[in-house]
Length: 363
Image 1 (cartoon, one colour):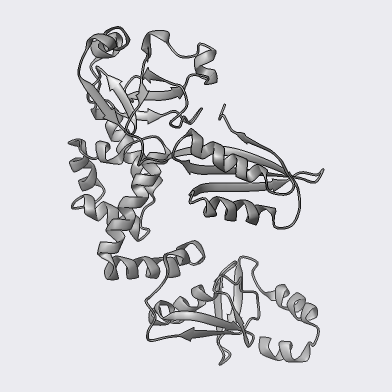
Image 2: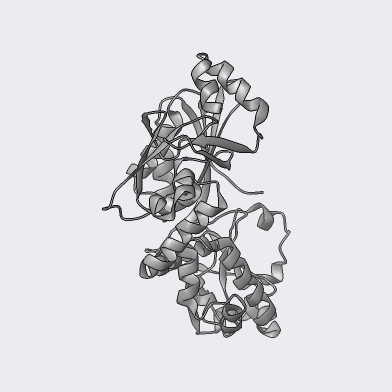
């Protein structure tokens, strides 16, 4: 009957308005080439449709036609669309990016199952890299965290046989890096208690002790078995003048000396200690910057492309336009040192229309 309406109503707007009367707004109704009706969650794409037809169709999908025309796989389906899936026997299977595109739980589950079954080694490597990156973004060293004994019980509670199973689960999308890292940090704080006397005397005895600990580009004299965490309020990078703050149960937090929390005296002075940059050459650090520009078409693309050309990773980006025609772009970048940061900011300033680029202090 719906197909008959579509043939009778030449005006597409009239057809869609008529269709909306009888259909729920939280679902989209589309058709196979033979006229079978398929219901999907609103916002679904051709990949959702393919997996709804058959798992094998989804796994071998390489393209799609909507109403007789080729469309990208992230195309948002609308009521009345006629979908035809293009498959290939030589397909390498689904892409991980599909997990960010599909809307139906059925499609997401089938994609995850494919990766879980077909690419365990790849999942382990990818999951390991993802967790390391997330831990580094939050200021932790994941390899230092997972060496503690509490990890064995944590893995069992999460139904993982070993650490590789955990990495694999992250790799194929069964659990997020933030979820895993939060559980690990919770266990660390419950089980690992730094020696109180050592914490109290850390600043006084630092210069007289010879034992040294180098971790993630930081040299700490006189302190052992403590985590190094980079403060997110000021995000220090090599080249910044820094100071360490011995926290209660969370290791040593590294701040810039010009951090507002330090300058305002919000940190207990007895817990401040001298630290130095050392051995940071192969490490990157998250830094947030903000670029302001006179809004014009393509400016965000130019910024992103320039940063990519400078071999700099972008962890997050957010762009917004104000009512007075100003575009504000916030970026979190992976920066090697202060000179690297200054080079990136200087390059961005040279883009036409940009009048200000600054480093953001999260305070």
